[in-house]
Image (cartoon, rainbow, N blue to C red):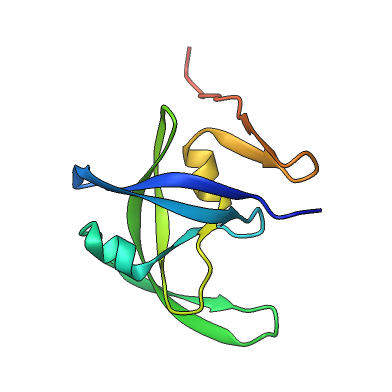
Length: 122
């Protein structure tokens, strides 16, 4: 097993002209993506709530969260983003990947398109 990083554009959903690239570790065990607070503030993305997280040692931390647009190539998706603090790693979580229509295979360390299925009444 190895570590896989991904460079992804983070955008302000209220001002799509404001974006910044971020390199984050793909973490299939993380629900949300974490981006340094300084980057999010620079883009004008504001926190909307706080979330309690449990760490591997059983302790808990509180982080602010908001919503960001993420762009990878020609793919664009919106997802919850955690405001990373000093010592936090930049992470790309599964909800961001899913919003982009992507999945990550940890064995081959490759991204692949998800089948996009939509339920209809037809």
